[in-house]
Image 1 (tube, one colour):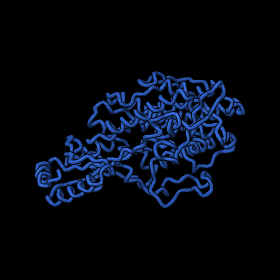
Image 2: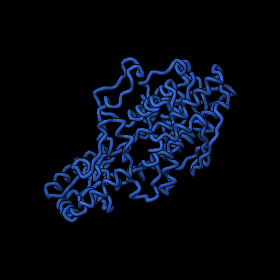
Image 3: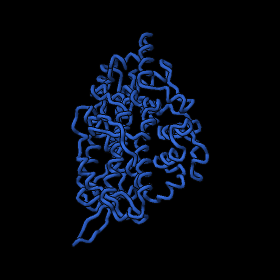
Image 4: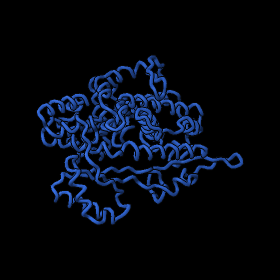
Length: 441
């Protein structure tokens, strides 16, 4: 594995190391752009210190993915005995780059910007990069598509070797064809993917601790060191795969509960969705220019500060949506409901929306949804991501589903599915009068 030559200080992981091979990619303007993309968008309207950026998170994801892979190798699991050092070193490098670049395609204020993504045709990779029958079409692009396009762009300009770039993209997306070298690693690629994007991925392992730290809350804290210590490589039905020692099940539960609480208390807080709506209206009504129509060439020029500068120019012209954002004028929350939790409540909320609109209130809704876990066997879910764990009985290993050893996972998998109904602040008094007339409220 490449010698690490550069140190970066980090408040979450203390020291992050970079190699000579990684440095040019980290220093590339497209990756440095992430310094100017906030990780949590409008969450800072509620938690003022939550102004950390996606560059920090990308470095943290790269670091954690690499550290965890090295831990797995140090244990010398029998399932990896067939791989030589050169293969494992290559897998390590691909994994680190995949962690670094997994979020590289995020636009500013991502939740709002996603509605303005162009057709996926604008960000397609070369046809021979895709697996047969998996070239996407007929849909809107996602930030994941932009990340793949950016990885390809780094190969085009010579920053990344083309085969390495394609393997990075193949770890980030199953639609991409692996190079012969990565393909020879077989199911080891599944472990790389699980470490970057899965139920135990380095992405969420970093963002929970980082977002919690910068938001000034404790909801996202879990036992990372215990989770790493109990990770292992198990012999699954199709080859080696990422799993847990049975003693790590509680650490996994802690991770999932931390994520659940962060969504309820921070990510789905009532205030940020209204500001996302304001930004959407500012774009839709032409107060500010915001376009991703040309694909990657538009994305790399978009940053939070460029959008904010346009908002300031619009506010100077006394345009209302930009003014509401910059003057921090929250909308008034009328109702926060769980979708499907109470059919009668959901029905009455729609009646309320109609009554508010009839009373000339500017009423709008925002929907926030997140699953608790995609693990197979969690709650009533049969399909999903398999995660195995190992226990020993009289010294003999027994490999089972992790959900067989967790009452929490076996019984609970209720998604967070919230709908917020708002009116503009100037309509608050009329909204109260409308609600008082509806006896159900």
